[in-house]
Amino acid sequence: MGTVVNIYDYLLLFVGIVLVNYVYENGYLENDVKTIKQENNPTLRLNTEEISVIDDKFRAIFFIRVLIGVLLTTAYFYLAAFASVKVNAYMFLFVLIALQILYIIYNRVRNLLNLFLILPLSLIRFFGFILPLIPERELGAFITLAVLTYPLSKFFEFSTKERFRKILPWLWNFNIDRFRIIYYLMLTVLLGAGFALKIHQYCRIFFLVSAFYLIYRLVGLLVINNQKILADFGNNFGRDK
Image (tube, rainbow, N blue to C red; front, side, top):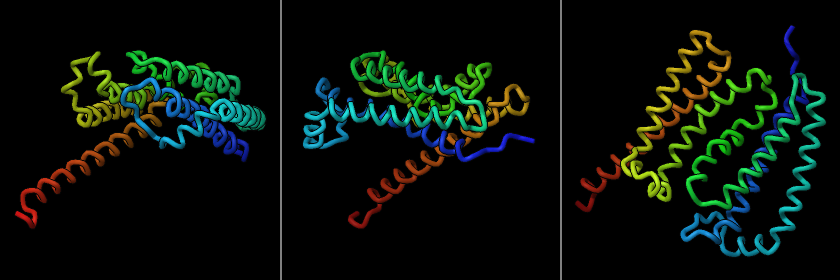
């Protein structure tokens, strides 16, 4: 008889997802209020008034967020004790601390290191809540497949930003849309082969995730191209022509 999933399992996953995104938002908050002061042309997600209000009360806001984070982490440890599967709660705590430290570093440097920090930041953001559920002997395989499925692709996409093109000039002619399709097509084929040959049990789930991304990117590219075609048609054969 298999393991019976209970309510604690669902609550554990929910709190885990909330915590990872909560800590990740700490990095966003600092970036949107503090880091932008050091940039010449920052990306603004808040208006001037919001930035001013948060900046004036930044320490108090961050202190309150830390307290809430501690309460949520305590709840996670409590739920882990009643989960139907083995949960490495201390690993999850390490993941959260690592995420906070990595984002602090990310917000304080503006060089090639930012590009490479995308790998662990993306890994933790999208797979961090799953890591405590993975047996230690399978952790290496899971992380490798997880990195291939999203963080590595994100790394190449992020490398096309203008500030990195000065460091990596070969990226000027890099077609990110074409890259996404080719990348996920190759990855889907490789993971599909791994699943068919039963190389590792995680090949199946990551094959499905990769196939989803491939379809998502294909549909997105078709929509973009369709919009371009409609725009060109309107420009060439519009009513004012």
